Structure formats: structure tokens, C-alpha cells
Image (cartoon, rainbow, N blue to C red; front, side):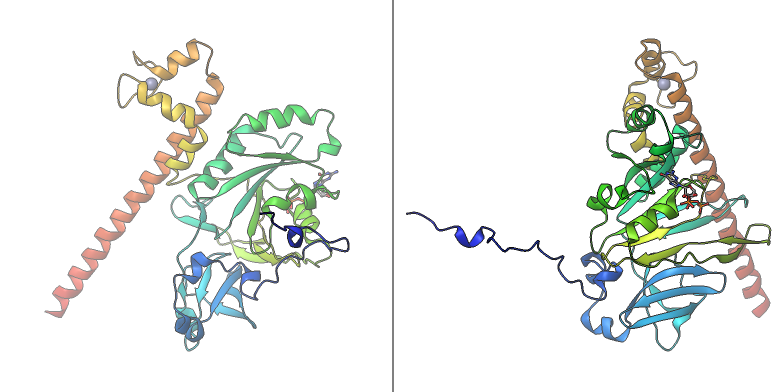
Length: 358
Ligand SMILES: Nc1nc2c(ncn2[C@@H]2O[C@H](COP(=O)(O)OP(=O)(O)OP(=O)(O)O)[C@@H](O)[C@H]2O)c(=O)[nH]1
Ligand SMILES: [Zn+2]
């Protein structure tokens, strides 16, 4: 039997297939992961809204034909989905997150800052110049892995650099799980080079220090979508006002982009598995050390030090790994201590109150 496949072949006047039209919610990044958390009745009663901005006095959130301010209440960050409580918006519920980027709050000794929720891809941006710093890239990548995200390294300003290949090689050496893209952010390159991660219905973000080209990349992806960078005034840890921004933009292509301010200080906390994933080889090697609690400094039978001695491991990279592990342990421990103290204090207060009532 001969089969006729002609109906599957493109006809001579075939036009390129159009991107499937997204529903209004899908265009905001609504995905099956969120839909399965609520019933159709709940969708009507408490419509889902996506948090597009975080302000000092609340959140800005958008849904189907809704764009509104939500007063403080839900513990949400940019990218979160909340179920709007129409009577009491501040009591709106936050849906379970697909991914969450957090860091230790800068300045303050304790506390966690939620940076972005429900991203699909995070672009870790650095430039082919003095900004380039392997330790900082590893830090951002550990943060992304810990957040359940697949990171991509983007190296900008290739047009201002004589030897971008050197930067590209160093970036590629960080992890074989992380693709590296090098480009001139001010050209057409971002649209094509980043296209595979910026599909309709996806949410992406750019993370990196100030001046590496995050806004330039956002604008390049936006094409003709007008993007106005809105400055948001926030209190910093010392009660001073600082101008920051963290906005989620919805591009006409159907992709959502989060533009974050430059982050130089990035302290990891509760990030052990993210660090282990970046340094997967070292994490494997350490299991072969003679002692379980080996610090890989002077111990006999240390498999890590043996690899250094055989020139199979760069001691500088080892030092970076040890620093991140130590920092994460320290920050996670102080936070856990604080939580225990808070609990103990709460109990003491409750006890005192019950005694008073008696
Ligand atoms: N030549 C060249 N200039 C670039 C490139 N990427 C960014 N720039 C320029 O670098 C400067 C900083 O870029 P921004 O996009 O504002 O950097 P940012 O990361 O958003 O910085 P913050 O807003 O401070 O976090 C701007 O003047 C850009 O035009 C690039 O690939 N090539
Ligand atoms: Zn060891």
C-alpha cells in the first residue's frame, strides 16, 4: 500500500506557522503547574493574578482584565501567582511556586529576601571585561540551581573586547550543565540567540551586577514593545530610601521578562544542594575522603587534596568551593538559630499570657 503524505507537506504558498494564540492568562505565564492547584469554581471565585511589581506599600498584580494594587498581606514576590480574595485583597493566597530565587537579605544579619518566583529560565549576565568574575558567576548559578531553575550564562559586550573567546572558555568551564551565550546586547543578537528560552508563555529573568546590560537585553527582547523602567523606592536595611526596580514585563512575543537591579552582594543561604550541583565533581570526590567530616585542608586520606596533588583539580577552584560551602553553612546556621530563638520567645510570651489570664 502506498500512503499519501502530501497533506503533510508544505504547499507552495505556505506561510510560516503563527505562534498559537495564548489565552490572556497563559500570556501572563499561567501554566498547567498552577492550573492543577485550583478548581474551575475557585478560578471564578478567586481569580489568579500574577505579581508584576513589589512596592514598599504592597504588590501590583495582573490577571485577566484586572490590574490592581494589593496591600501588604500575602508573602509574595515578583512572579508569584496569588488567588485574589475580592473582599479582602490583603488576605489573598499565594499559589505553590514552580521555582523561587531567594538570598540572604543584604545588610541585615538575618532574614531572607525573596527575589523572584516562577521563572522558567534565568540568564546570569556578565560582560567580557573587568566585571567578569568566575566566583560571582558560580554564586549566581548555585542560586539558580537551588531555585530549581536552569541557568544560562550570557556574556555581553563582545563588541568591546578583543578576545571574547577567553571569557567564553572560562564561563564554559564552570559547569557542563550551563550553556554559554556571548553577544553584543546592543545588536539584533539577543532576539535570535536567546529565542529558544524566550518562548510564548515562558518567564525569564536577567541576574547580574550593575551595568552588565540587563536592561539593554530586556529592551532587545522587547523589540517594539515599549518598556518604561520604573524606579521603585524601597527602604534599605538602614531605613534609608533607595531606588530599586523589579518589574515583570509582558512582551508582545508572549514571553515575560523580569528586570532586576544589579546585585553585587549575593549571600547564599540554605543553598547546599545548589552549590553541590555547580561543583558536582568535588561533591562526588569528597565522598571518597577517608573521614566523613574531612575539611580537605590537612587530613590524611583526603581524596580532594590528592586530586590537587595530581594536578587534576585547580586549587583556586577548590578554594572557591570551600568558601561558598562555609558561607552557606554559616548563614543557614544563623538563620536556623534565629528561628529557634523566635519560637522559644513566642512560647515564653504565650506562657506568660496564659499565666496572666489565670
Ligand atoms: N557596546 C556595548 N554596550 C553595552 C552592551 N550591553 C550593555 N551595554 C551598555 O552598557 C551600559 C549599561 O547597560 P544596562 O543595560 O543599563 O545595564 P544593567 O545591567 O541594566 O545595569 P543596572 O540597571 O545598573 O543593573 C549601557 O550604556 C548599555 O548601552 C553590549 O553588549 N555592548
Ligand atoms: Zn577531603
